[in-house]
Every structure is written in structure tokens, then in C-alpha cells.
Image (tube, rainbow, N blue to C red; front, side):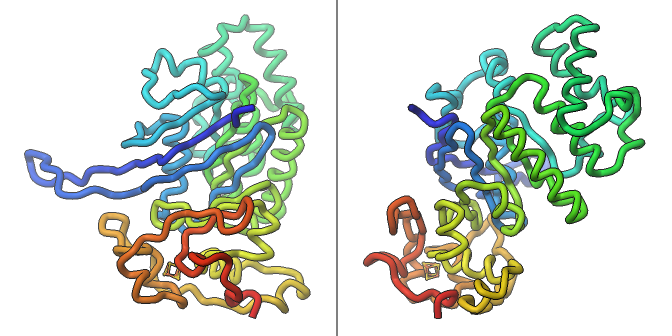
Length: 333
Ligand code: SF4
């Protein structure tokens, strides 16, 4: 069976223009050849520092941004070149939840109208039927239906994200892309929203692309995790392998900043990630990570490592593993 979503060698470059003639003087390589798939009922976590291109991946998969190159398949169908009219049925299948629910909810609409709006646009559902459906969605995400006539500013941050989730669920989607959906919330509220998303996944067999900058957040919800650095995926594997035995030095550095139980911490050497992510306008040659990597070799400055399956189901883009898995990275020393 084909995966629900498959992305092949996706690139998204943004031109930089200068002068009154808007001459193109460069390109921002936001996404630079990314491939992955998401199965039905599966959550793929997509993590990396701010500016690594992870949010752009989410928006490009949904075709909110046109891809520069590469292919996007949904249910085995190539949607890359579909125009707005032919994308319409796919818009129902694929929904998005944003980081800041307040900014993404229309402040002049009631919460009930916000949740019911997709039913007007896509289904022309009659008023009473729509009201009934919205009330059920409110209950399902843990909001009292009486709140349907309230406005976004009358809700807390966590409640507003519940409204966003109810709206995303209105059309019975198969894929939800969460763009840092819990990053703006308090830790205790984050856990509630993640638990809600996991319950909904079990109930409706939803697939998620869960974008976050924090590995601790994706650990709980993800089945597999892809780590992005400067527009490329540098490691991709199941959650347990990633957290127990990261194969890429960047993942190792990200993990060393995640609070862990004492037993696991004993096996881990702390790696401080110094410096900022280099500019995606002029990424470093060779391995993009070589300017910050404590294992960098002369070869890393010239030759970009390919994302290879180093162990079954465990992909990494690092010259350290060219002859097979090289132990130890610092986390096992
Ligand atoms: Fe570090 Fe080289 Fe591996 Fe890049 S290829 S992560 S610079 S060791």
C-alpha cells in the first residue's frame, strides 16, 4: 500500500531581488532536496533550529507555497502541478495547525463560525446541520458547545489551539500538518494538546507531520523523526533509534540539550552547539554542518554527504558512517 504522503527531492528556493527592476541577485535555499513519506496513522516529527526550512516543508507539501522542484504524492497521486481547482479535493484531506492560534483565527468571527467555515466552503452544509457538527467538534476537542458564540480573544491559548484543531477536523482530513502547534503554550498545556492530538489520531487514523524546534516535544508524539539542518534532512529514523543512538553529530548536539532521566543521561556526553545556523543564502560548501561539527574532517568541507541507510531504517547524511556505523559518537563514549 502506498504511503499517504510521499515527498521526493523537494526544493523550495526563494529569489532575492534588488533594485527597481527587481533583478534576482541570489536565492534563499530554504528547502534543498528533501525526501520522506508518511504512512496512514503515522506521525513524522520534523525538527531543527529556527531557519532550517522545516516550516517551509510543511507549507510546500500543502501547496500553500509552490515547490521549486521535486514531487509531492498524496494517496499515490502526483499533486505537484495541480492548479487550485484540481487541488480542491486534496485541500479537504490535508489541513494545517499553526503555532500562534490567536494570529490564525479571525478575531471578528465567533469560534463556532471559525470551526464551521470549512463546511461552508467545501461542503455547502445546511445551517442547522453545520451547527450540530460544530457542536460535536467542540465536544471532541474538549470545549463546551456553549462557547461557540464566543470570540477568539475570550479564550486561553490552549483553548484557542483546540479551536484550531476542531476547525482542522471539520472536513475529516487524513493528514494534519502542525507547524510548531504547541511551541507558544505553557508546558502543562502543551502536554494536554499533544495528548488530544494522539487521541484523535487513534480515533480517526490521522497522519501528522509535526514540525517543532524542540526534540523533547516530538519525542512523545512521533513514530519517526526527521532532523533538518539548513534545508536538508540529515537524519531520519524511528523515534527510539534516534533518541538512543543518534548517528548524526547535529542530532547528537540537539539531543544533549534535551532533559532526560538520569539513567539515559549517564550514557550521554554533553555537546554544546556553538554558533548560529549559517545563512541559507550562501550555505557552507560540502557538509552544511561542518562549520559547527566537532568531528569535521577536511573532506567534509568539500563533499556533501548523501543521506544513506546506515542501518536498516536508519538514515544519516554524514561521512563518519561511509564504511558502516562508526562508534562511538560522544553520546556513547
Ligand atoms: Fe560532521 Fe563531517 Fe559528518 Fe558533516 S559529514 S556531520 S562535518 S563529520
